[in-house]
Image (cartoon, rainbow, N blue to C red):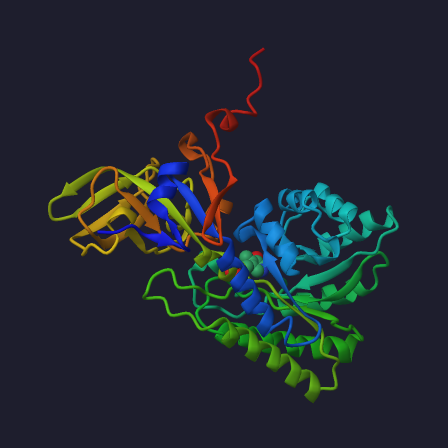
Length: 421
Ligand SMILES: *Cc1c(COP(=O)(O)O)cnc(C)c1O
């Protein structure tokens, strides 16, 4: 019987030192993943840049890594932009996304001078135009296209196709591009698409790209609208369990870039600057969550429920879209599986089950469970349901652990309560 080590650190010791639930994130893994992508994209071709989708995982430490590694940043809210500003993240490398930015958020983006706004409607572009006029600014705008391609992923992770709220279908896009070109205080510099998340191969990306390339040519030929920037989104899948077999990142990016280059060469177009926006790929496998097992309840003929001290409030993904995870019992690492267990969260929701059916060693109160691949969309989606505090984050670098974000206190949860009159 041994302990489970994550990037050189004993996770049982971490649980002991920092308490549970605990997010453990490897800076080394994040850095390696960023460098892998850059070597395949930013450094391999001219005018190609990786933007990290900050909604996947955003902390000061993360922003520090991104700054150091020289990648760009996608934000979708004033809240995300706020931390980027605090960390003096270079404004020109920030893209402000979101389908319903508030006036305040647009104003914050203009104040900071973000590199581009990615817009989902003419309505919003007109608002930005108006707000930019009064400041004498002329921000870059990308228009988000819905290429109508359906990626093979959970419906809630689809952002292209007939019924998604995101992007403009091609017909509406033409109209919008034409009206946009007439506005004086925005610079419509390009197009954006993002097919969806956790995709296993490049099929949907390439299909969408073909739609976009057709539009780019048409806009140039018929409207003299030049697409100087093409933002191809993220969505590159990771393996949550051994059953997931995502294509390698290069098998997404390389054919995508090659397809753009070939099309542009064949059609006499200057190749637009290219952007990709990975989120999950960079941080997902770089993090795990540690829990302590509480009550264990065996229901004959059904399952054994092992309840843990976290759940929906630190990882709502299983409840949101039936996300599947793998786990190990950290203090019984290497012990043969003995039981089929349902790893239950502690929140008052039947859907709060972290893992439905996993073979684990004999599990008992006090055991430490590590749920794997929780570095993306867990801390960023964490919430205070049942007034549970959001767990701390520990970062690992060179085999050393360091507290990055402290655990919320009960006082933090109630900090916005006003005194009674
Ligand atoms: C969420 C999102 C991403 C990142 O998606 P991943 O699946 O985490 O790579 C990229 N671009 C846009 C516009 C997004 O909404």
